[in-house]
Length: 297
Image (spheres, rainbow, N blue to C red):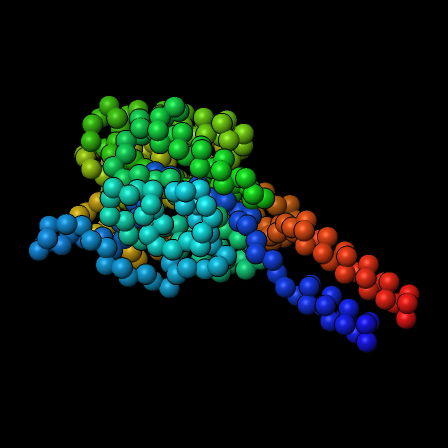
């Protein structure tokens, strides 16, 4: 009887999956199109921006997708991802949730994803330089995300619309953005941190092509560009629509999965789920008890 009971307990212990912290961490940085404005339109009656609240299937919450809140706590992710980060703006659907869901759909063994929202709408590239509030916040939030067992998989960057207003800003964009990437890699101590950035689909000024040219020239190693040009925009002709954000997220997911596959010599899944030590101890104790019961038997 004792032996049967121990076998049942052991079987149950191995079948129960402990709650996992995020294993695969992604930083979301940039301005409004990264923060998410999909479904945000102007209410003509109140003359205010409102989000329609429509969440497509590709953006639905998933227990395997977490986000780091403004209070530095891991919580289940849901749209709008940046509601408590870009809190002075009206947020809607962004690329983060469709990006994460696309990865988990294509690789169910990928592991728990942790998103670190850091994007703030309307920000110029100069506001992201080393030592600035936005830069320090991004580094601080990322370091907080690493207090668990996760690994930073990539920086997702979508910014530049604000740098299209003057020729000087546009022409300096390449130099400034690359310096930020180098500084982030250094301060996070990840010299080859993968970076997936987005080439602009729109801009606030007339120098969009200059900024886009800078974004499409990847002189740094391990930097890929996903081109958003041609994706439909909201009526403001600046922000991506919800379907466009879904498509962009899927494109970024394809880029990161291809990047990971190319660096994985065996071609196997990138699921390296850690096992909590406490669970290991519990299982070991059960095995010991089982062996003792067998001896007694």
